[in-house]
Image (tube, chains in turn blue, green):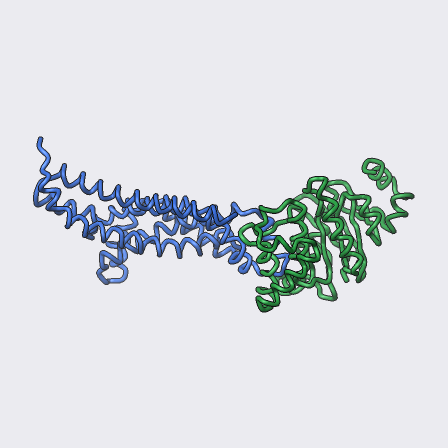
Length: 220
Length: 239
């Protein structure tokens, strides 16, 4: 067995382009997931029964089925209904974002429910509406508490985005596969791919740790 | 100021309030005492709809409480002080006091700030304006909570065991603020275990047990000469 260092060096620029796309998909999916998650999370604790039911169904479905299957549904099954081909990037972001929205909704719900009941009562007793109390009192406090689990979710999503390689979108994992098909350098390329993923996840977890520290100081 | 007729409250199977009729006049200070679990806190919390009555009618300053629409309107005029203070920990003392006047009454920040500073001076905490709640002692937090409620210029103040979560040496400073408030003519309903304070400040004392008002009248009369057996039993334990 020999390790072809030259292959690693030659392939690195191509892999980095893939990593760039991985970051892009993850960032956009997280953005979509945060928006969906905030509304679904609030719907799950809000007073409206229909919204609550819909939110529950959403969370159950997307947490209860594999992301890979969801990607197939978005990329292969939805076009059967619409009759239009799906762009792989749109499919990737939609599937990852909608999936992540379900997990983020649970994170927000747990964060909001962890805020003491008296805070809502104090806000309401001052004449603030439910929405105002949520906005000015509950969510700002919950936000600090959800930073660590949100960080975990971002890292999980970054890794799970490798699944969109199956629909041919050329992010990091797919790039690796393509290079291996050409060079047979499984060892060198998969190790390189793993190291690049590791560099990205470590960066995120450091950033989350920094945010956590910053907000903890601000609380006092 | 507050009129309550035929108030019942159930929590599931539990019948907490069993038909309460109560009128609180303007400038009156009503003190509510009774054993724990008697329903006295629930009664107070119904007065601003934090608990929704199961049956009966409540009106505050002529407005009947019957749903979301007028509940917020009424709450602007009814201040509430909680046992656990419930200050907003992510905001400074000043921001705690300014929030509701600005968001509910749309008062300009500069005016809200002036009012907040005046109120903090009144409760003796002007130097704590920029502190965060967890930098304050329990007694100081409760005085800020009173100032926060007063910033809405309420017509009625409700106190739900305001000194029960305090260390003994801090009870006095909170009672002092409440005493001054009572003297200034504020309409107040107070649930408390401070019998000395009840006797001194209350215009009327209610003894509540098992979801009913058992006895009421001037505090002095009830403390010295309770008529009902249950009142006698309760007072013999607490006095």
